[in-house]
Length: 86
Image 1 (cartoon, rainbow, N blue to C red):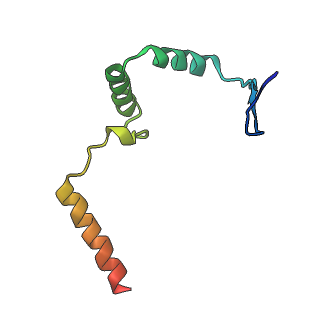
Image 2 (image 1 turned 135 degrees about the horizontal axis):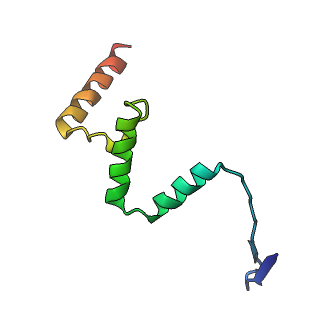
């Protein structure tokens, strides 16, 4: 169903509602539903547990430590040196 809204400048805004269905295994569905109920701290604990449970086969970028500014600038300096050598 669409809902049309005519604008004074001659344009028409059309709102479309699209339904999309997909099938997922029940375990995945239940895990997803549980994740929606967790707060941010609990989600981080679950992520850490998943890393430990999978013996680091699965890692999360958001759990990695942020590089210090000093290390960041060192890395930029190395990249610049490589590009200047070419």
